Image (cartoon, rainbow, N blue to C red; front, side):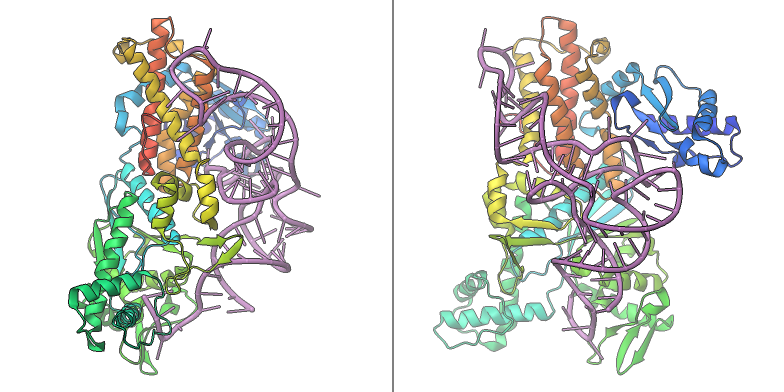
Length: 549
RNA sequence: GCGCCCAUAGCUCAAUGGGAUAGAGCAACUGCCUUCUAAGCAGUAGGUUGUCCGUUCAAGUCGGACUGGGCGUGCCA
């Protein structure tokens, strides 16, 4: 990549110019895309940032650096000082053509790097307890999580997708009671629906399934059977929904296994031994305050039952023990407060909490006719993810959720989603891919044989639209790496839209299959490269790349 | 009260470790299909980036105060 070439060059030019005593490390040199084409392909602001500490005008510094720059003309054709002291670099065409070739050579692997070095990473997401179908809220997390997992894979990590759930808590008890109440209703018995019970219709379906399987003989002592049946049915639904979205988890981790394996008990013991747990008012407290947190927290209630923090700590200890070098937790905004305790707990046990990266995404705000609706599984005031998929399709759902930053509060209206789905940018990108494929097919049908890459004269690609497209395409690996490192999957859809736009623009102005066979060959390379980038980009975000639309 | 997140075009959102003239899509308006897919292209219009201070050569981006919204703040998960 060109930045990897330029940074050391600039760094060494600074050293040679002797304008500063402290050397500037290559990675500290910022290279960005200038706002305008006439400013070149990369702009470096180092002279501006050095101006202050060196007490020297930026233009003078820039000139001093420029004098010492030794660049290969086959890579950089021109360097200019502009504005208040920017150093602007202009890529040479030969470099562009070389990079373009690389796209075709690497094909489906284009954009993949090995910076992760095959290290084990884990992404935990969704992790909804099986109390009801997934809602449009869960959908956001499911798609963000899956895409981040994809990105890490493209970065060269070996990724495990994991779903953590708890089927022994109070929620599941209430679920069983809710099913029992509906079961009684089916039998025509008088029943009292639990006050905080799950009101969704799916509970009635489960009750019917229970009735079919176990007959009329169940009573309130059989809550466990009801729970297990409900859990099985709901989990199957959840898995089906996820599969429809193309999401498959490697591990479903049950919290209760942390008790049966003794991990939870071990955490308690270790915390006590290290002096980070103490008893007060018959409860066991974790000394979170020792890690800069505002207050200590209860981990074992006076009743002897653990709070959620304890198994969460044990779970993360388990993750680390499984050898993950990178652990990504994706939570909704409601978990904001809990994770610092968990990280502190991990640290208290002498483990490396820096391997754990917690990503908090903001909620989906559900509206109906302009009115905000509070989404609640218990009250069944939610739109299911299945409903949404039904209405607008998997492609739109995935793209829709990914276009936004994690911090963005996503306002969601099913009616609006239906209406705007037809205008969804996902089709814009897919259409570009279909168009590309159609051109390649047309060329093939016309009997145009693709000749070996090394025999093609790419220098014929010199129209501004062609150069613009090449420059954008070769930026793909950089983009993938940046979005992976920063956990910002929304950059991918945004970039793909840009690629589609620049391609459409090129298409409009120039014919690919022309009377000039050499030019045709060169343009087919460009079109093929576009196909590869679009396809690979869509793959990362889990959207199909249709060859026809 | 306290903590975290957000506020950018009429609407939904972008803006790559502060960087040069804040960009797309939708909606509105004007053009472009005998030629590789018009689910497309070109163009017009739309903005004091919630308000006020501050830091900086440079602020949508960093800091502070305020306004409005979301989520939390439990020996519930």
